Length: 329
Ligand SMILES: NC(=O)c1ccc[n+]([C@@H]2O[C@H](COP(=O)([O-])OP(=O)(O)OC[C@H]3O[C@@H](n4cnc5c(N)ncnc54)[C@H](OP(=O)(O)O)[C@@H]3O)[C@@H](O)[C@H]2O)c1
Image (cartoon, rainbow, N blue to C red):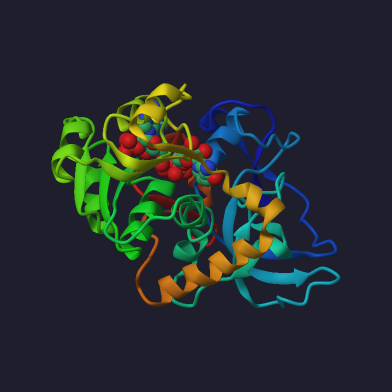
């Protein structure tokens, strides 16, 4: 089969090579799929650079989530059968930017019938991350104000939709006019373009001076620092990622003085500590998708050949919304 491989670490455009490799085989507890769709995620960029918390042995194929058609199941797998359409997280070093992939059955779920292949593939990491962030690590309440940074991005776009589905007022901060349009299409109540506006006074004005109750931050750096200026009394700042490249050093005296919480979220850890919760979350996301309350908004449906350029643009912060690679295109 054909697979994009990283044999030495670096920028995606420089190090990804399309390679002919042996077809993978499903071992015990595993599922072999023909890949139908695999979204680009910032962690794929970090994997290529060697900056992700997981460092697969070289050479590896990135592509952390996918939708696929089951071709074979390994011993002990009774939840799936050949022909099923499933979504899930791939087994690195064999990721989803390939014609075939193997998943551990416990990390795979039925694809919602209401979503096409690209949409279903994008229902996993981003939505799971935001679900756990907003409903488990933080208890977002109806009527509260949720501020989302990088709100037209992979995880940010899911926080906008899940925030609206939870009955919150949602403010999205984005970089540029195209991302602002995308964020409005997601349903945000207020969109702020960080290229032309300072979000701090706008958030204060929108909330009558109170500030945002929950702030969802996949960016870090200035986005975090300025968030502390407009977080509400008893507000919660969710630390999701550092796409801006700078890991903030919080001032704990400030958190004390203003009565706010700084809450970390690493979704992948739930695979280790509470796998059941991940399955329950998928059932809830499927219900929300079937009821039309969430729907991944795919901005680019690309071929497998487009992976290096797509990931390059994702790493540069230039992509709008979800980009998905489909071997069949
Ligand atoms: N905690 C978890 O469990 C978890 C799970 C998944 C992902 N993540 C993390 O969440 C972050 C976002 O991932 P994603 O896949 O959703 O990516 P993404 O949001 O699609 O892309 C990153 C966005 O960050 C913003 N940004 C601001 N400064 C940037 C800079 N200097 N360089 C690049 N981007 C910049 C850009 O949006 P604007 O221009 O609109 O500001 C850009 O589009 C990553 O750090 C990822 O590792 C964490």
